[in-house]
Image 1 (spheres, rainbow, N blue to C red):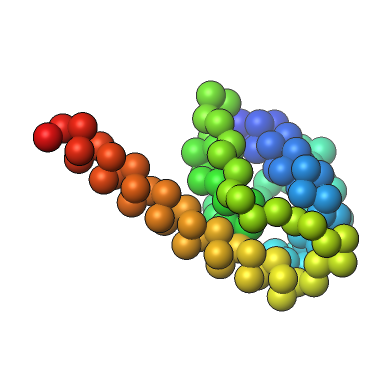
Image 2 (cartoon, rainbow, N blue to C red):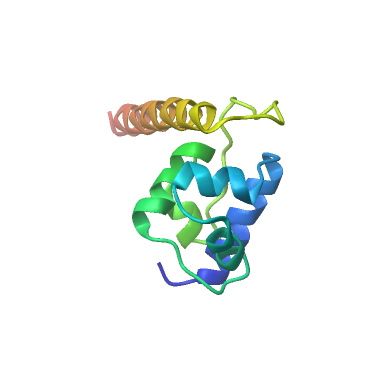
Length: 116
């Protein structure tokens, strides 16, 4: 991961767009809230493992954080509650991970159909 500014900017946009607080994300990632604050300011980096967990939560792939030309294709699951608990975020991340895998499989099947 090279462009830390792109990564932190996109992360903050996803977090704010989902109405999640830094504290909620920090608890979900099992890190201190101040680390999220510093990350969003570009003062700290997150490990690939944590970024993958973030990708699961928001339904995107790592390429979204690496490539400024990559578009975010949101999942149809919405964050509608202002009182989401960590367990809720874990469930959303698990569902999004499955949905991302289905999206990937469908794109592979579409490519196979184009080649035939």
